Amino acid sequence: MAKTGSLSDIKKLSNLEKEQKVIDKAPFQHLTITNAQILDTIEGREICERCYKSRKFFCYSCYLPVISEKYFPKVKLPIKIDIIKHAREIDGKSTAIHATILAPDDVRIFTYPDFPEILDKEETVLIFPSQTAVTVDSLFTKDIQEDNKIVTTRIKNAFPIKRAIFIDSTWHQTKAIYKDQRLRDLRCVILKSRISQFWRHQKKSPRWYLATIEAIHQFLVEMHTCAFGTVQGYASTNDTADDIMDSVIYQHTNKLPDTDQRYKGQYDDLLYFFKYMYEKIHTMYDHDRLWAYKRPLI
Image 1 (cartoon, rainbow, N blue to C red):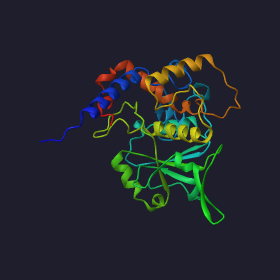
Image 2 (cartoon, rainbow, N blue to C red):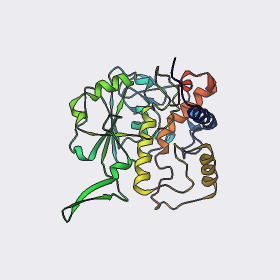
Image 3 (tube, rainbow, N blue to C red):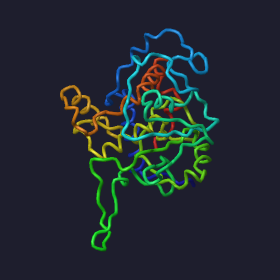
Image 4 (cartoon, rainbow, N blue to C red):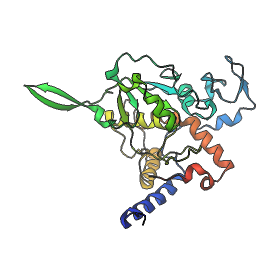
């Protein structure tokens, strides 16, 4: 006889599914993302100045915008991001390009076996759920020796690394790249569980398998929150429907000085194109009918 979950597990899953349905109705309302309606004013396509191919907003082969910078925001990141893309990953389906367009000074994409030069392994991490992966929070603890004793201290108001590497590919392809010795020497970091809103379906994958741009955003939010905290009332990507409603109310009734370093949406614009495309997809298709959103939550 097949083993079944306990009654408490079944109730927990049922509550989780109900909670997610509420969030799925407006998954970005708690984030501070620039309104992208201006993109609707762009008619036709443009020619990429490098490869001369016809593109809509950006060239996903050359990682260059084909529209004026007035049509999209720029995001400054606190660390550098390198993305290693599998050669068989279809360019037009990848969200990695969003990061290079929106944060061009801080993000690079390499097509494997091309590789970023890693000068300081101690200040570089790989975002990959290996067996030895640590949480973002654990990066902020450091062991120092005082009076012949090891004392653990916490890094505050600063980032403990300078570079993070992401792999952009299917899960099977990711494992193949991870075997490269140049990556095996890096510390691996695992992210908090977050439900993806990516509309593309991957077989045999749960909804907490994130699109690349979602993973980059999640990592930076966790890093910033660990370093400086978060504004009370500002919802995160892991919050409940009630938390999100509190956040919406907060954002409409409070103003904070620019000098406040707590997280209040500084990297949310990384999801600018992602949110725009999500909304376009959902004007053509019913959310509940798309296979990507029928994947298991856990």
